[in-house]
View 1 (cartoon, rainbow, N blue to C red):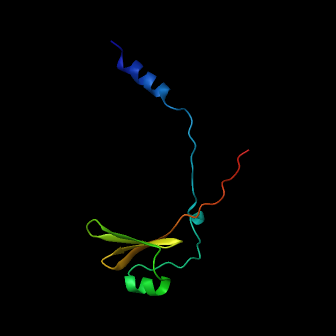
View 2: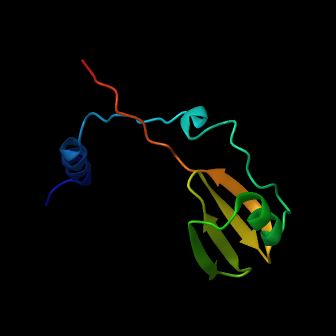
View 3: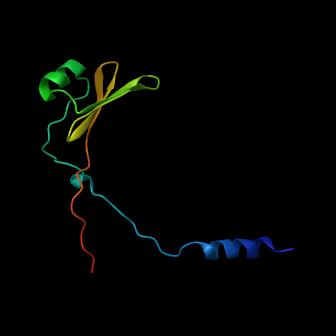
Length: 98
């Protein structure tokens, strides 16, 4: 019978040795000057200020949370009030590695 330590060593050697870390700085995740709906704003106020969303997602969960997607940002609502607004990531051309 194989010893547990030898089995563990074999399993660890089978794992990949290197890994690359990908980081996306918060400042590059969208236009910092973009005005977003404020917490507590009503859906009506968001409609008046930003117009119709590109896509509306139905409410899910308890409490029910719905989402409106605009081109540059998304707005999350609970009971008709803004819970949070987030900028959408704007991908840029990949850097060339030498």
